[in-house]
Length: 331
Image (cartoon, rainbow, N blue to C red; front, top):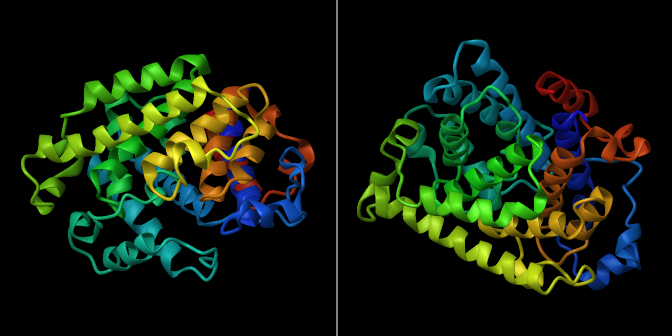
């Protein structure tokens, strides 16, 4: 099935679909495509910073694993370099998030990454890029958990950003392992409850101490509690499923990490066997359409594999060769 390839292609396809509709309301999107189920992929299928930063994480992960088992410093050094290179790149012209820009600027000056992190931001830039960590088979659950929080923390240090990044990575991981989509909400809820007061100092260092909010356990619990509330909204949306409704009306606009996760998962679970419909539903929304569709595409591709996507779409997606290379490596 080539699930890793499917996920990498899917996230970029969703990103390119949503790039066209981001910042538009539903009436304006309707002028592009009166029927959301027919939203076309642009002929020049450019992606946004979502895919660019995903590839930055993928390159850093490849470099880290070439040196040995994944540990914090082995990932942090190449990831810092990749993020700073992205920040400086002339191709970084796709409406990037301000948190990423400011944090990468601070990363470029050296010093502990915890000092560069924005502890007040839980923007979806934290988890829009985390999919590669769910695709590397040899990683342990503890490595996926710690690394997904660390990659978030380099820019978005809010506890909800950390927790939502972990949930996003595990959703990709479980789907790539063949999990039943219908079982995901309950499995994610159980994972969030299990992790609720586990602050992983091995991966996060003194990040929580910089927040001045109680103990490390109280710090991280805030994030998991907000993610559990997002899962409540997801459950309510699925219980009264309406594929024709704007998903952002049920799970939020997706501008913050837990809403992006829940909204993307809603779109995928509405159409678990129709990946194209899932990314179109996410892209035709009133919120952060590129990030929602990017994550929905990662979920759908991990579930259905590379053949889930139309060949004429995959042939013209930007960064195609990089996406295929990482996918083939992890498959």
